[in-house]
Image 1 (cartoon, rainbow, N blue to C red):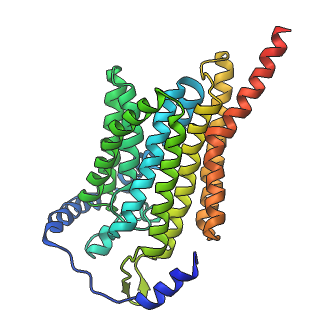
Image 2: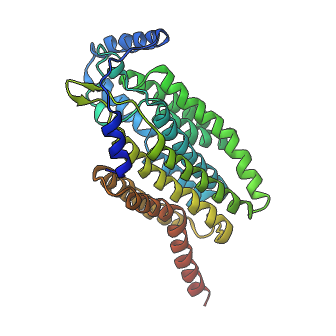
Length: 346
C-alpha cells in the first residue's frame, strides 16, 4: 500500500457497478471485433509479428534512441528526444489516472485480446502509452531526420504500425491510440520551441527544471491523494486496482524526472561534445551505455514495479536510474576519455 489515506479511501469508496458504454464507443468496439474475427482465422505468427512491432513503443527502445543520440551524435538533439520521452510519460500517465478508462475487453466481454499481449497491457487504457511514446520519441526522431526522406518514411511507417498493432492485439480502442498520437504530435512542436528558448540562455534550463519538478509534484499529489478512480468488481475480483496504477505512475514519474533533470543539469553545468573522440570511443561509449539501459529498465525498473515498496523509496530508486543515464554516465565517460586523451598527448 502507498499511504494510509489511500487505504481509507478504498475502504470508504469501493462500489460494485454495472459497466455501461456510451453509443459513440460502439463503432470502436465493432472495429475491434472485425479485426478480432480476422485475427482468430490466422495463426499466432501474425500476433507475434505485431507483438514484436509494439515493443518499439515501450520504454527501453525509445530510451536507447534518445541516449545514443545524446551520448554519441548530437547533445542538443538528445536533450530534445529525452524531453519528449519524459514529458510524454508525465502527460500520458496523468491522463490515464484522470480518465480511468478500462481496457476494451472490460468494456465489452465480446472482445478477446491476444493472449500474448494481455500480460503487457495492465492498468487503464486511455491514452495508449505505446502510441504516445512512439509518436513523440520516434516522431521527434523523424522530425530531426525529416530531410532524409527514406529514414523519415521508415519511422512514420513504424509509428503507424505500432498504433495499428494495439488495435490488432485488442488492447486499445481508436480513441486510445489517437489520444496518444495527439499527445506525441503536440509535444514534437511544443518541446522543440521550449528547448530552442532554453538554448538561447542556458540559465533557462534551471527554470525549466523548477517548473517541471513542481508540476510533476502537483500531479503526483493529485494522483495519490485526490484522484478517485471508479472501482468495479466482477465475480468478486477487482477489474483494475487503482493502488497498483498509482504505484506504477510513481515509478515512471521518478524515472522520467531522473532523465529530464539529468540532461538539463548536464547541459547547464557539464556540457560535452558527443563527437569528441574517435569512432572507436563513440562505439564503445554507446555499447556500454546501451547495456546500462537494458540493466536499468529490464531489471531495476521491473523489479521495483513487481515488488511494491514505499512510494518514496520507489521514486528515489527510479529517479537515480533515470539520472544515471543522462548525467552520471556522461560524467564518467567524459572523465575517463579526458584522462586517456591527456595520457596520449604526454
